[in-house]
Image (tube, rainbow, N blue to C red; front, top):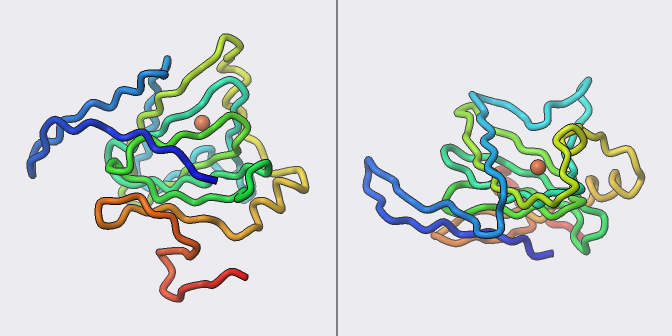
Length: 172
Ligand SMILES: [Fe+2]
């Protein structure tokens, strides 16, 4: 499964000034999610992981400051489990409809701009209800070895080991 990243258009970048166009043509929403310090969206419930899943919007998540780890679960994909260490340089991560997702910040926190594409049936009362992985295909997808996405040498790379762990895991 190849994930899509929408690049930003940088107009000016100096040590003190960063100025860029974050626009996504197909988007009709503009949501900001600020994590002040360590935070998870949506938060865990009694230590159980919770996820968002949308029926009427495609997300495009761009990190404005900091770094945010996104976890994507979608049993219909050939690779159903992805972990993305998202930063601004990677552009906006697209999250297709029907994909369970959550995001986690480190101690420094992070600010994310989501520019979704919403359809006419979008209802905020229904679209943002945290969900547990309560079906066997979701649980199995979560257990499957993730594909990791990182930013290295000015490029988005996908790797099959956790870059934060010292030992390189090999998956059979
Ligand atoms: Fe979302």
